[in-house]
Image (cartoon, rainbow, N blue to C red; front, side, top):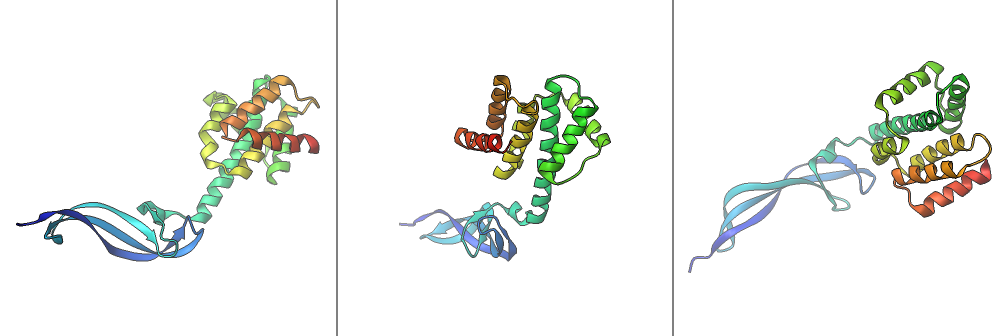
Length: 207
């Protein structure tokens, strides 16, 4: 009786070094290919189609898609910082727009709060440009944050929430409606209720 069939065969086709997201360090990798073979008596005889290729970290043995080789942690950190700074500015602008027009005093407040939270300076002209963009996009603050939330880590989310809290509590009193909006902001950035309550209590004690 002739026994035949097909099975996948894995082979290494390349190797090198890359930044492993699991190890969070530069490691050696093996690029592997899985190909289907026609088998005769369980022995691979004729190569058929390619089933896929992947990257395997030689240290932790985790596997990744090929685009992991393009990942650059320095560039990712830069992109995160830019997005997080932009989110802080936009949140303050959108919250102030919800109460009406943004005048010179509000722009100065945005400059001051942004400097305190981010450690960076922003000019009045840049704030006005961001206001114009916010007008044009016409997004509620929660919709905007749902869009950028994937780019923020836990610390970034806390700082974005802090900027919103400072604007909401600028008059010295956190109104019921303002607290509701802060809750919605926390939900938009996928912050757990317990995490939200904890950071809100911390902000209030330091206010």
